[in-house]
Image (cartoon, rainbow, N blue to C red; front, side, top):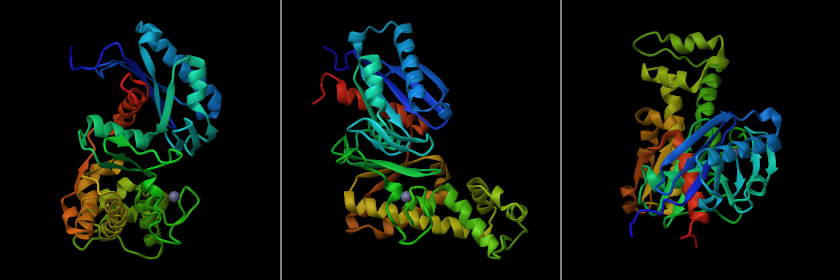
Amino acid sequence: LSSEQDNRDFVVAVDIGGTKILACLVDGNNRMVDEHRFLTGTHRGPRAIVENTVAVVRDMVEKNEVPRSRLLGVGVASAGPCDSVEGAVINGPNLGWQNVPVARWMADALDVPVCLGNDANLAALGEQRYGAGTGVENMVYVTVSTGIGGGIITDGHLHSGGSGLSGEIGHITVQAGGPLCTCGRRGCLQSLCAGPALARNVQERLAQGGSSLSMFQPLQLLELAKSRPEEITPHLVFEAAGRGDALSLAVLREGARNLGIGLTTLAILLDPEMIVVGGGLAVRWDQYIAHAVDFVKANTYPRSMQDISIVPASLGDRAGIVGAAAFARDRFGRDAA
Ligand SMILES: [Zn+2]
């Protein structure tokens, strides 16, 4: 008998985003044998979107001649807070969804088991199984981009919490009474150090009369943007900082410090062996994430925690779909508990 997983076991993985949906057919050796990407079309509403997804999954399974008996089930990753116990999207800000029972709708239509989780939670699982955290039993994944999300792996398993809402790292309160967050609360980690927060902080300081001239050369990027502050993007802040702009550098340092506070909280609370950082801002490692890492190393408790490794994610935007496949296999595979 081969130690490889039995190749009779197919799963379908689906990643539902605000703009696009990706569906993949994955064989028993975890090879993606087919994939289909299509526009979400949020204006059509959840029922039509789920029906469209069901049709895509059905076509893909039929086209590849996978009989029903060889399909273990479907794993769905979705943006926004999700109840992974009920398989429902609780609140998808990018989707405009409220309490949509995606897993039940899909399972009824396809007549196979369907499970659903938050995309950052499932990205954590993906990175732990096949990415930067392969084989690490206790790991936290944090994604830093337009928002901040994450997932917690404990003893090799995704920690879901009582209602599947575990890992909402971006909404840890870091500064009481701080900036308004997309969740309606104030001072969340996300409201202090995700991409939009960096751009907003630069805008506010320019409005207060802050200068974005560097000591050595007049820096025109932010001066140009001063007349059109709405055009200051996180990308521009990093570009300006890279050319020595003092204001941008100060904003990045402050953001990184707040991110460091969030990561330190996770390190002390969970004692993970590794923190994996992904998302659009993880590519700005030296300019941004590294400073947060320095903060963690200087502030962990006890000192032995200074050995914690904090590393970049390796699966990129595939982490969610890879994790969705692993999630379905965990739930519905023959070895499932
Ligand atoms: Zn929040």
